[in-house]
Length: 604
Image (tube, rainbow, N blue to C red; front, side, top):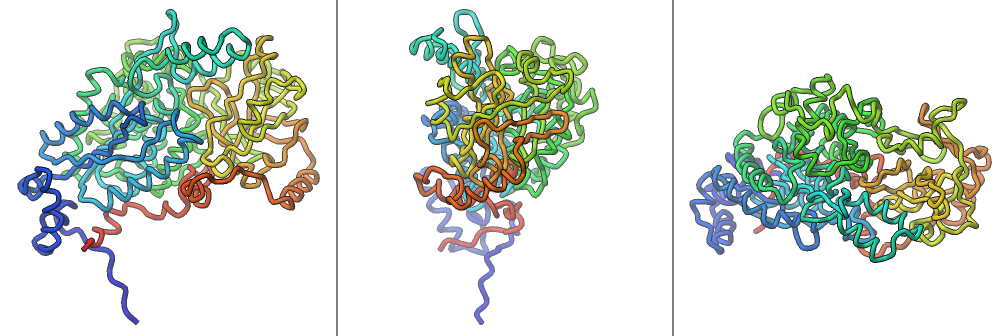
């Protein structure tokens, strides 16, 4: 039997890139690789002089307005790389714009991850600067860097400047949810609606609220994958260009130190990120993304860990949607280091975790307290004392989360303040199959939605939508809004925008399309939610549930929309549930491939 060729080539040279550009033991291939990269003006001295080749993963483009500032920022990154003795190689990343991609940008996180892995492993790169910003660009890039495990550092695009409308702060995303209520009740017409929402986006950059973008960039810093203060600097500020330059310089040093993502993003680093997420009022999308990043490092991180390490911690950052301020205020008040300083002083942070600048979290952030206590509060004087995610489970699903920092006084008074049954309620279910059903029918009085209703939306998870769409943040019908009832309990197997202030029960796994109890709940079923125990159940006999499940299976299962593109079909066939990070099944077995798999085989 013929033995298969060895596809693993050991890297015995100082730099990975030397296997392409300066390998005397493989002269014919070195010449082939070298000649083509000389054809636009690079010199042999640059490529064969022992200088690290640094990739710049470019996420900015006209299709990605939240990251578009990187088109200019990377010029300063290049300057930093060159100043430190490296050679920059810029390359594009598949665009992921939350507000532009239909049916959902969530589809493309895994696609961008796949392409980044192939670039980082298959091309002559010794390290990489990850340009991040809009929601899913950050986890996509961190997942890719984790899998390949060459030295990597992230650079945020930064939030937009503060929005303003007639003297009032308007936060990107958050104002949409308020404005649509005003549109539904006739307080705004179409033009007024558009003008109000547009006021929240006055400059380049990502959401100026504590939405998913601000959350994930803050957590990237908390994990140690950026330089200190990187997350919160607004995109147009001069400090953003300065941060880009310093990031470019630092990645060259990281290559010489062999400081890789697996050395930075440890189990303790993820626990730090969970703690920070509660303190900043972070997005409910964070568990999905961080669980996915951890999985690619071989670290077991589950939804229950978010409750264990983050639930009982306080909310310190006064930013919309959980508070009142916006991104510029967050930066000027001290950003992530000021939050970390409070948590370190309270003994809630693993201080010894190494970060991208070679120092520990403690060394970077200890004592960096905020001077503006309206924006970043002291640990013992928080906005809310208990503000983390509550995990729920029951006969509807195995896992879902509720963001307790956005439970309003109105919501708590109506649903969670019964002295005979505190922090729990029972309500009648009204069920929608997708957002089209919801938008077409929510204002129909015949549905019988009242203040004792719990709204369900299903068929919007990873398999059902496909991609898990941000459609669970459902407003109350117009006739309830007119009575001052602004929020109803909501449950869904999809996601909710991190900019939303609704305390919905989200990310339900398994989803309806995977056969969970969500697939068989019906209008009129009574549902009990108990935040004391974490139970969320339809109050339907087990026998009846089994009967409904059997009938659904006999009819072919929960119906889903057909795949519209090849990638949608591939995504559905390969992707795990939200609770598991929605990663590609089987991809997590490929870990630290730059070292475990050696150098890829030659191409000629």
